[in-house]
Length: 380
Image 1 (tube, rainbow, N blue to C red):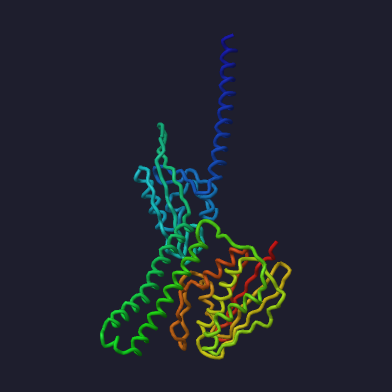
Image 2 (image 1 turned 180 degrees about the vertical axis):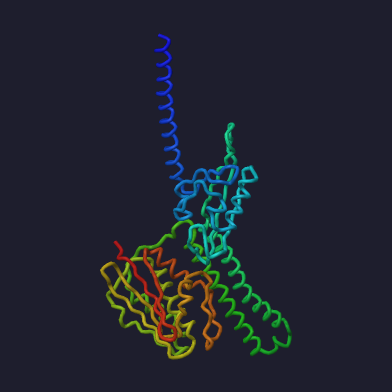
């Protein structure tokens, strides 16, 4: 009887241990599934800086290379990131640190915009309960947030710079106007006032453009009117507004290939601004005479295709990816004068087109031709 009971107890223990192992295995499986579902990299690191667990996102960061059993220095090839990780682990206190990598290599094995990526490391020790001390580490890719913050900083800095120059000129002429000799010379005073008005208009245009683009890039989608209007009439309105500039530069603006009956749905105010900025940009970039700008539009299977092309100096291929960025300016051609403008025109163009569900791309052959091609889906 005693032998039977002993055997029964042993059998029960084995069954219970088997159940416990199954429960632990299932718990670990559920843990792994939960951690793999995280959008951030998650690591468990022991006291010798070896990785004892890594979730799917962590494995993706290092392009699928094995992490478990490796040291931090072996796992992450960028020294700056691995050193920051070790610092967080060895403090044995909860801490966060942001790391900005300015190298061409990132933990993802890719190159971010301008070769920059940003990461937040969040580390905290876990209670050991008699076992080895572990540290949980979360690595979050904050490159997009970092770049957005950088864009905002650059926007403020560039806007301040753009405002400072005309303000300084206006203040300088105001001081000169206070001189009695200048006031007694109507011709000189008129010249000063004319210059001040020109720079005052430049400030007004800059502020107007900043307000437009700020509205477009705010968290809420801007409210667009959905009206049907003829494309050609919209283009003609723009050409009339730019008539004095066109005549002054002896330029030609051709719109004959825009069909009279072609109509699109959208906010006419913003479409007028899109076409105005594209034609004005061509005129400003090519102040020499003999410039020809051609506006074309046609109905396509998916909607409308509209293009604005010129035969000016063109845009270098190295600059093409960046021309829609705020305040970005192409280095002027050696034969060009300084190009005046807010540096926001093309950025406004892109934002307004995207708000209508469309796309814009630019192509250019320096010294021959530049084209801005817009595709916009047909409105319901």
